[in-house]
Length: 227
Image 1 (tube, rainbow, N blue to C red):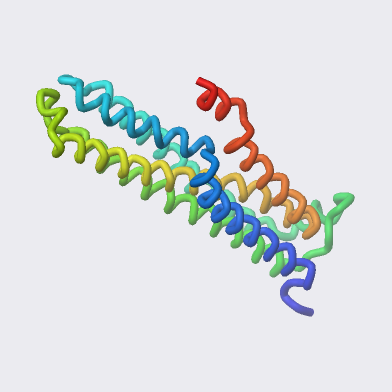
Image 2 (tube, helix red, strand yellow; image 1 turned 30 degrees about the vertical axis):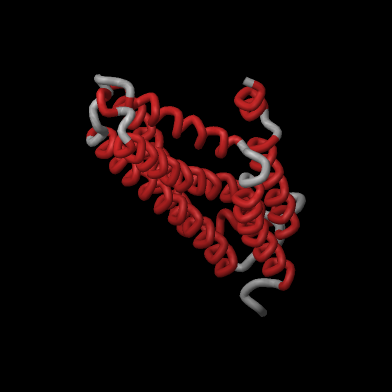
């Protein structure tokens, strides 16, 4: 008996293919039609220019701290999710009986269940690395905010170049944070594989549509564009 059926392999390729294609298409499309992330990048640049004109930059330090705290929360959540995924390996037989009793559940061997569980854990590991690196980058942003020239030099080319540098690093940190969150959303779609390969393909499409809508057709994006 093969480790995974042909339908399982097709569903798995569908899942990772949709994830990769969505990420690449999003990066390409944002260059032509600004999504929610791109709009926020503009506000990051505006924030850094405003920072140059402030003598006291406690507000900026508090904003960076808030970004760090949010990233740290998701990083710690990733570790908890990894532990939860690995805990599923301890109750394989009981869970297989529950899955088989579901209307759309399929019969699985313990090895197949463990393989799927390890795949889920790997997704959360990927998310942890993204959140951890984003947190580290926000630390660098905080250092650069502290190294910003005084307000009296805000018109100097060096000061403006520094503001662009800080804004660029903050954008990279936000990009890695977004990729970590994207992994969380696709992990929810991945859960469908524990029941059926057909359900995995269905939930993958649903997750991709929801993410795409939030970027280009959500109320939050319209509020930024219309204003």
